[in-house]
Length: 106
Image 1 (cartoon, rainbow, N blue to C red):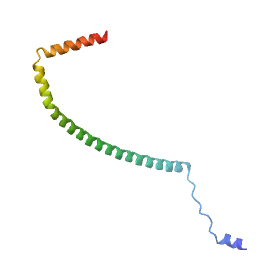
Image 2 (image 1 turned 30 degrees about the horizontal axis):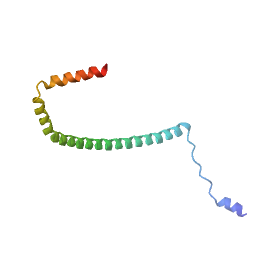
Image 3 (image 1 turned 45 degrees about the vertical axis):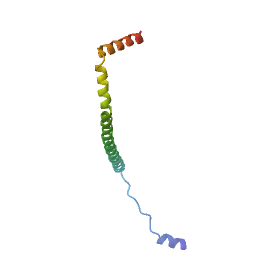
């Protein structure tokens, strides 16, 4: 009798409503779309962070390039003075280059 009283006192299992195929499909699609949208938002957030870092890097690279342009300026001026002291420097330089080009390509 104990078994009968246990069965009588226990509540029946709750029934879940069956979803139609369309409802189940829509539920899965909505869940998938939400996951995709979340992933796309996360990807966009990462991309913005990358762009900010790239922007900062470009600014720092520009500052370094400007620093070294200034450091090289005196050397450029010295080189130009030396070039000016050589008669027909560019004609000679280009002729020598063309001679090397012919020799190496034969």
